[in-house]
Image (tube, rainbow, N blue to C red; front, side, top):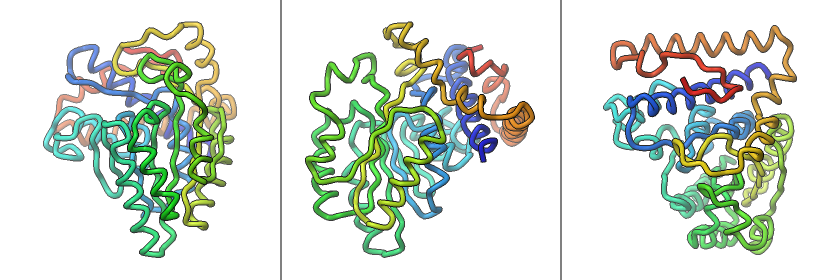
Length: 306
């Protein structure tokens, strides 16, 4: 299980660094928002989900999507604006839809949609749940509070995952968010749990409890995770204190998991990633110039862009 988790996290990291590499070399235009440093969250969650559970994400969605689907080919083509992409190249980096996975780049936009979907799942009666990912910055949107109110009143099976990576672009959350996130859940009589960690084992423990609570009580639950994104908000707009970034690099989820693996397991997981990339290259070779996608394999633990 640890080796499989490492495979997923490493694959997400490599994919997103490859995107930054493509932007750097002029192969992509527009923008992208990576989840570098937060990969353990969707990977830990996935172990507790069912096929028919629904996930709604946001602008920082690649890790959520890949942990769920392993579809690096469809995602890359979509980001390139290719008609063979997930949404025929029209959604780009932030707006994805496939098999019960939906994202939108507008902060808080999908919260009422998630409540409606969860209400429908409760009517169906099969114990499926809806998960919505939001960030600390999303609490600046009024529609979130309308959604929390309705989710609580209707008692819907909605798991609200708050990825508190501590920054809204380059503004620390303490400078734009009064009070606490947990007390916002309490105000609407929504159960909550808060953890500060990048360790996938601790996250798995938290998700085991929170997913089970939503699935069997059929009521909302807020799982708050204090984490940190190690890359810039977008492609390069980063004015955070470098010493702070360095401190959190020591808590990199991939480093933490690597330390739990034997050398054999680590090498096996990396080999699995390389094999997966080789398959992707072969599948994509007749569609795009794959050399533009991945003409290097960086050291992901040094956060290199080729």
